[in-house]
Length: 379
Image 1 (tube, one colour):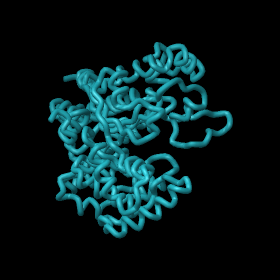
Image 2 (tube, rainbow, N blue to C red):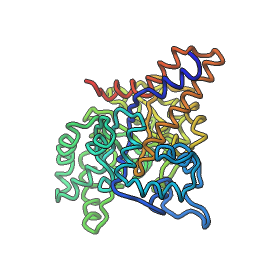
Image 3 (cartoon, rainbow, N blue to C red):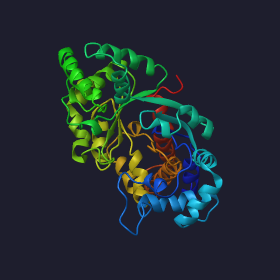
Image 4 (cartoon, one colour):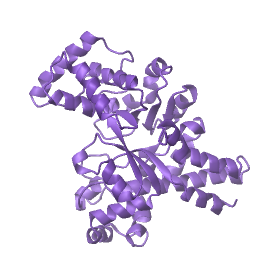
């Protein structure tokens, strides 16, 4: 098989995006549009835009042709074309062009602004399933008026109902506290005491769950549920403290759950994706992706993808875009991943380190097969 044949095979692969958010509902323009391409909530320096970045340049290069514009078209022309087509058509084009056959959608982040699994399926022509976020369920329970002594039982029953048709659970403890949490499950009395303190804050208009005792309780309730458990690790917006999002800080927790047969999915990773690869190698239940980093590193995403393939067993690496908001991100995550894989694997084939057959097999494992197995998508 020629290098072009390898690229064609990877381009034709129907992907499973194993961690993604919904595409934006409605039209966005100007600063609101550009904000979707940065993890920073603050405006860019005067005289620049958020599109002056690896991600922004990648959008202008790879997304413009989907809107029938030349590659590298300027931002003004790009936005004008986007307005002319309208949000619904733009979303349809990008989701369909991504070549993703199955979206696993985290429904815990600003869902009123984005498509849910049904909307993603309708817009893309693909299949979509739900990932339930633990912290969002807990905050719904707190808002229902339950008291502290009832919280644990009510959370368990609510999670059971919410996750009945879900393929996975997710924790954002990295944002709410950090990955340097006490790995042990908290006691019943500790949960009740922490719930009482949290509910008093809820009554004063502070519903966000940040208590480390309760966050740990949610994790262990998720482990008991038995579904794959996703963790945000590494890079994200400034709500997190980056050095506390190193997945090696979870090592004791991984030891405690390794016999539970619950897959632990380490999302994004950057700049700790090599650490995530090590953890995936030494723990039987640990998996990883480099989702968010692929989009944000743009032309440098090849290096990130290559580094993710250094230590991790190839049956432990998955594809993800972690796209949220502008549908360009759902398309671009797939395009950059395919290009990076074709380039990296093609180099190894050309140097005779790998065979063509192995390169194709690994691309299929990471692009779809591993996700289908771990999440039991065809069970």
